[in-house]
Length: 45
Length: 240
Image (cartoon, rainbow over all chains, first blue to last red; front, side, top):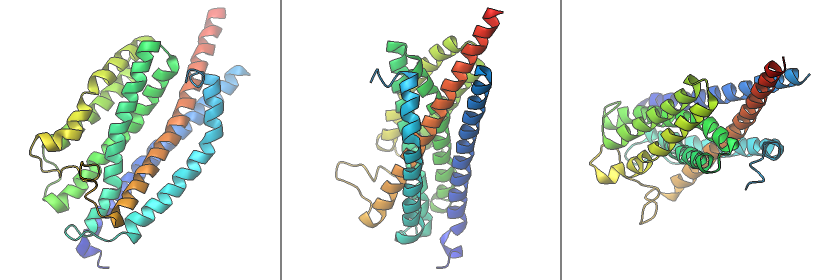
């Protein structure tokens, strides 16, 4: 398939941006969860 | 329902279902992305650029769905004063904002090759932009106000007043002349999308829904821990 003739740049940009956005928010939430869980454990100790 | 609104029961349940939700999310993304990028045919008019639909439409649906959910949790918090409902609304907001942003951004990237412009102030795009501002305002209230009770009160009002924008977004393409196309999946005459493409779109929509569910559960667990921590610290200060 001739990707260049089929707006491949736009498709890649849209998928790339979605991937970065979703991974970024997932990482933020997971790291925040770990940080809060660790702080709670330490506070209880 | 009241039983699950107990933080201890909720955490037990969330921890038990989370691994399965993650596995299902990964599986749905794998199948959905294979369909979106490999097995579905290109569009007769739009060619390969149409593949942006498989990530743009689910993001837009989730942007709307999460706001309705947030308003529902806010209504429950307002009526029953249940702190877990406030936590559910608060933690849903950043996720909804991200879906809304991705819908706007991928729509803009799709618009350039199809419409010849990145952005127009038509009714659909503008109402979606307003939804993004509502999300940002809601998140800002929680972060800007130190007193969590006051922040919760103001945030609930924003969520409930802002829900009026949801039907405006949905029906904007019917009420006004827009550059954005009218509804093509859920219409009175059935879907206008060919089944060879529709299945991948629906799988991607399910993948986005499960991703939201997984991240929302983790985020709520984190919020409950943060609230417990605040409580323990304030008890410690009070005991001194």
